[in-house]
Length: 152
Image 1 (cartoon, rainbow, N blue to C red):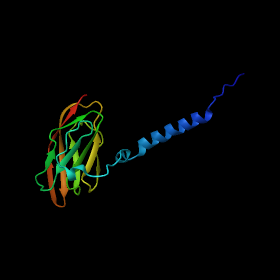
Image 2: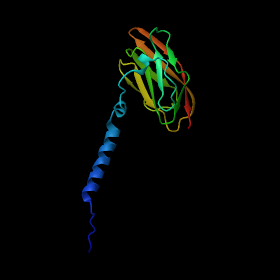
Image 3: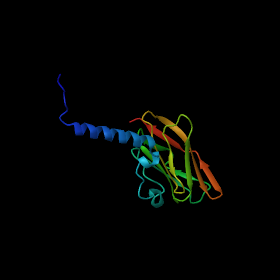
Image 4: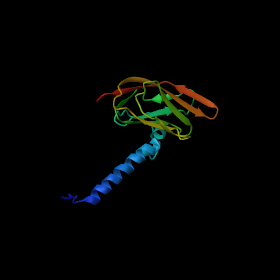
C-alpha cells in the first residue's frame, strides 16, 4: 500500500482556514462594514458633483428643506458599482428606498450622518425611480429622483 503525501500540507491547511474565515466574515458581517467609509462628505464642498457612472455620488441638498434638491437627477450608474448618497449638511437622518424590483442590493445608511450607499446589482438595467427621505428633527422631506443603470 502506497501513501501519497502532499509536498506542502501546511499550505493546504492555511488555504482552507482562509476560505473558512472569509466565508464566515461575509456571512456574519454588517454589509456597511464590508465597504470602506469615505473620509469626508464630497457634497459639503460641491453639492453639484460631476457625473461618474463608475463611482456615482448623489448629493441631496437639504440646506433649505423642504424642498430637497437631488443632483444629479437623473443619475447614471454602471452595474456592480457602489452608489453613494450624501446630504449636503451631513447631519440629518437619510433613507433611500426603491420599488420592487430594486436595481440595488442592501442599502446601508449611517445614522445621523446623512449618508447611504448600496451596490448596483450585476443584472440591473433600465430607469428606476427611488425615494429619498430626509429627517431634520420634526421636519421630514421626500423626493422621487431617477437613476439610470447603464449596461456597459
